[in-house]
Amino acid sequence: MDAHATGTHSRTVMKDLKRMYIGGTLVEGEGTVEVISPATEERVATVAAAGMGDVEAALQAARAAAPGWAATPVAERQRWMLKLRDAVVANEEMLRDCIHREMGKPWGGTREDFDLLERSLKFYAEEIQRVHDETLRDLDGTHEHRIVYEPVGVVVAYLAWNFPLLNLAYKIAPAMAAGCPIIIRPSAATPVSAYAVGELCHEIGLPAGVVNILTTDGYAPSDALAASTIPNLITLIGSTNTGKHLMKVGATSIKKYSMELGGNAPVLVFDDADLDLAADIVTTVKFNNAGQICVTPNRVFVERGVYDRFRDKVVARARAAKVGFDRDADILTGPMIDGRAWARVKGLIDDAVEKGASLLAGGDRPEGLERGHFLAPTVLGEVTRDMRIYQDEIFGPVVSLIPFDDRGTLLDLANEGEEGGLASYVFTANLALAEEMARGLRYGEVQVNGVKYDIYLPHGGIGQSGIGHDCSRLALNDYLVVKRISRGLN
Image (spheres, rainbow, N blue to C red):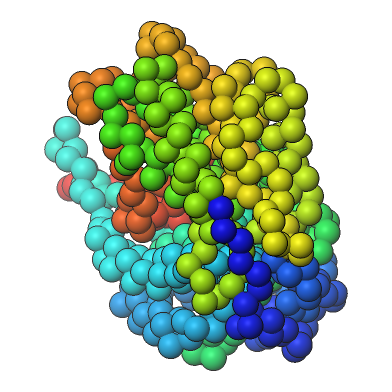
């Protein structure tokens, strides 16, 4: 496991106050938030934070924009989306640098965030053209019936910090395409790149209130967005507990909800699997972004006959993974988002070891990285159900290996627990077995002998892991409502 210190390209501090974007203008707001780099523990930027007055201004701006934006022809909405896309493309270096510094994300990892924003705007600008009225046949021949799709109305979107622009892309593009004004509330941990998008919206002259971007310092202003009766849709990327909280707070009125929530993704590795492929995917997805990914493998069930071989392959990859914050280096694993997150994952590791797990790699701070919230890529062997790391979503760079002997109980083990329901993985050369497992896994996504995510592929959970979808044409369903128009035939 290689460690790299901070590179010379990553020490610039943003000194100017980053302003919110509300009602078509850049606003200083009622407070400020200091954004601290988890890689260097130094201030990256000071950003405006919304107070209750700013929240109300954003809600009113979005409500005022709703009728006009909904009535705007699709072709014109498309032009605005592509104009924003062009501004995003022209500012690639700046946007990626925002993510790199505010999150400590390795430079190579910032491309996925950036690409998804650019591609999402293009994808939904095209996809909205495929939404058409439908005609229903009247069984009695007495009426004519049409199904029409209309914008749901004002949207409030809460974003997680782990993919600052990717998460924003999942919300802003379908909302704009569907004709819905949106208020985007990025995490106070990583608001800089979202504010930069607000600046681009301002520069291109986007109609006032169509997009509003603000963060909050404290629960009250954040909750006020959901508690208002103005929003028609609350959408979230975050934890299951946060989803439950927002639904409770939002019960002041009947609203739609679209939520991508937590997960405890199982991986099923059978004795006929391509072990190198499985080890590559598990470690890449697990150690990328410091494991702070909702779909990252958590519980890796490995058939006993290949357990030792697979374990050794995973350990070798963990030890070879490069960790750090040097823009010029090919780094896989950056820092945890803050000290509390680091301590939580370290506590899960320590609990597992105390209860009998084998610490095979990592487990603590990497050598040579004295600053920042870095955790070495970690592998635990012989993990059991009584360990917290088995039960909890890890959200850190830790692979938990669990040997199994009985295929008959495997699906029950993989499906148990409230934290499941989002992503799962199967590795086997037996296509019939793969199909049996895929059908039996109660997860919104099952990845068989590979992994693929893209803007055109549905992304969503089952049960406690979410409602609705991000990505694909299915996401538009969350931003549209269905109306039936019937006319009697004389």
